[in-house]
Amino acid sequence: MIKAKMAPARDAPGTGRVKPLSILLVEDNPAHAELVQRSLESHRIANKIYHVADGKAALAYLFRQGVYADAKRSPRPHMILLDLRLPKIGGLEVLRQIKMSETLKHIPVVVLTTSTTEQDMVKAYECNANAYVVKPLDFAEFKRLMDEMGYFWLQWNRTP
Image (tube, rainbow, N blue to C red; front, side, top):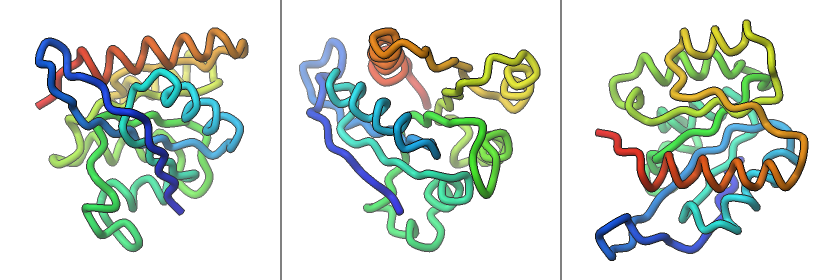
């Protein structure tokens, strides 16, 4: 089931206009998902944060299948935060399918994981991850990471 949380809008840099932004968070750990959502909301980084808890739901959302078929209820995200260790379909397979899709391949995918192994990092970049970020254990560091990452990917980075 998709969970959407609202955060206040941000001005698009240099325009004075409000730019609606959305993030798809693919995270099976409820505590981690809540931390990500609260951090992004508290820093007013996105208008909507859509959360799915497994790889199968992520692909259904992105390819608008089943309960996600309505484009109004499952809009294209401006960024995807993707955990690697997911039930049903793993994060690397989700990443592969996103980057093979002509419709989805331009969406930045940030792998947000607890894995520090070089093998996981290499595999993620081989699947064309846009970034590989290890979740800090310290809450204050995690909040700072979400703030900086959100500003970069959603405010300053431009995609086609």
